[in-house]
Image 1 (tube, rainbow, N blue to C red):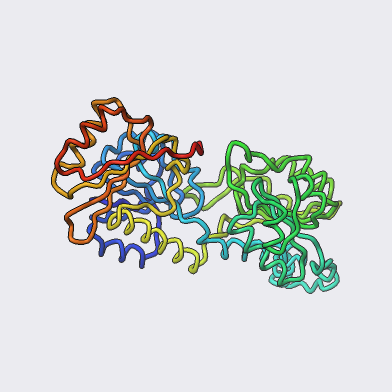
Image 2 (image 1 turned 90 degrees about the vertical axis):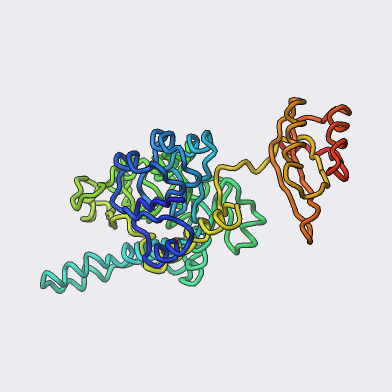
Length: 408
């Protein structure tokens, strides 16, 4: 099977992948457009930032698995992959420490204006009075929007720095917040209204696009700090700009709209905000580096290898994102039978003739290899005639029908 790595991946991971029964092709400079022409005979695709379009997926007739060497899968047309029966997996949580570290790098830089102080010294100036005006962060409240792996790492570090962390997520309950040792906000509005610092760590979906807008910035106290190391599409950047100018909002971003691909220049007026406005607001930015520590890249690469190895050697896909978790099957057929060639095929043939759809199949072989047990999750109850046909096979030892709870 051919494996195509269409983005940069840690050399150790590439070496480990070459040790597997795979033909590994490493082309880290591929783009969305050129990828479509490179997927012929590819069974496994690994990407980081390279977009995988529906056209690319539909053209890849032999593709079985796409692994996103990172957390989100929004750069992959998951719907198209699901329609073709192609697994999509990711590497969640492996860059959480790196991202949380940059959050606090930005936070402390904003409070102490470290980048400006360094630039001043490099220019030969000694402006101690100007850069001695920091407020300090001890005892302040940091609101964490999105309490997944990254949000939890942020909360851990916040407490070590003497901050009071409170969290909000759509699935965060007060009890779960208490277990994590953080405060709980029932909504993003409530979180903003209680936060001296607001940091954003939610995934990008249709529901979260532009989730942070004018109302959020108006609810933050004046001269609050806002940090976005997640996705630019989560934020109304025009509203953020206005808050910097009018409300003294101090901002740290690692992501900006329309990031350049394959270029070393950027044209955006966001960075005209680096000089404090009359209200005291300003913006610091970094070029999308939050997850780019050596430690994080090795952890992500190692997880990528684990996903691929499991798929090849065990037939399972860790971290799969496009397999339904809730089965709509109403019955389970349990068949104990001799482990002979064609036995299960004969059973499935009978089920097909009776118009019964099989949603899931699992087969276990017992010690000695003489008998097995197949479990078939099916959509409708087999008739007596169907069961009679199955039981008539000499190799079938026993058949049971179990009614499943309706969890759909």
